Length: 346
Ligand code: PHE
Image 1 (tube, rainbow, N blue to C red):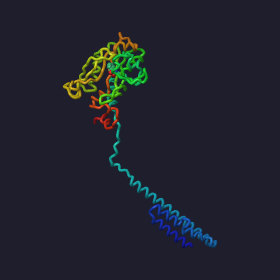
Image 2 (tube, rainbow, N blue to C red; image 1 turned 90 degrees about the horizontal axis):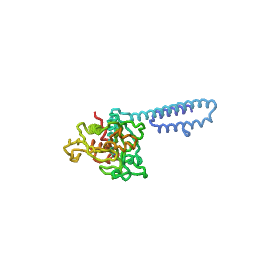
Image 3 (cartoon, rainbow, N blue to C red; image 1 turned 45 degrees about the horizontal axis):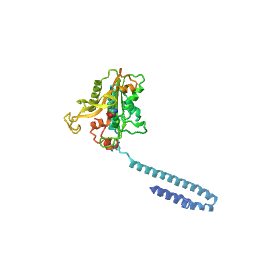
Image 4 (cartoon, rainbow, N blue to C red; image 1 turned 90 degrees about the vertical axis):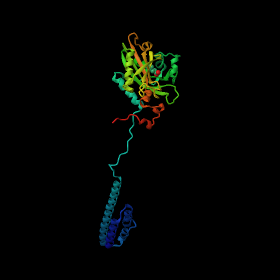
């Protein structure tokens, strides 16, 4: 029996030595150590042995079991190690491979232009303020010298929410809010960039949502030449140092006198081209001296203070700067369009 056990041990150890995968190792395990194994067959015969022999066979079988178990454990570990090594080998990172490109977002063209305008005016000591997009009829029109029934309201076809509330059609109500909030009625300079809404049919040049930057300066001895100088600087900064501006008489109920401002065409230098529609000039904004009624409505003494105001469309400036011909492109968020802006100069 001792010999059989020794033989089983040797056979088992050899088989264990030969196997190379976990499945075969399990087969070997059940062949030698399982319930129906040769080993347990021998063990079942223990009962027929004398005490003396049983002791001897018992200790031999313990030794055989221990060495087979140990060999099985070792083999299992080495198979697992081997598998892991193979896996690691396959997963090895090749640090010389070029990396996948990370798509970085870019700032929206309207944001770029708005920030450029903000930077310019901040550098001239202006505050940047904002107001609500849902406005009262009172602030959006009435206080701006545009009473109900005034024909100039037609030019700003509005989205009314109730009889008294609407989506603001321009950023001018922020003029009113700022002047009312200015309790000491002190001179100030501010711009207000923001979204505005009009009931327009959307097409390549119109959008029911657009954005403006409002400018308002109130103080003593403010004159038209201050307005002109400020807008000249603005035009040069946005469209190039050689730009000139010209004022054309216009009408806004909240300014008197009122003007529309054209900038000399940056493409053809006043010769006439497709951008300026042959005129050499491009209209960029509306402006004027703040109407005395508006100053008075907000508690500013119009005999002491004067002011100028202007309103410029951000989409218009951006389209001119970047040659964008379809206004819808600003709002559809197509990455093929958006990635063309905000390039870094290297
Ligand atoms: N609020 C005017 C508009 O949207 C623009 C403007 C602002 C004109 C300030 C004059 C002064 O049409």
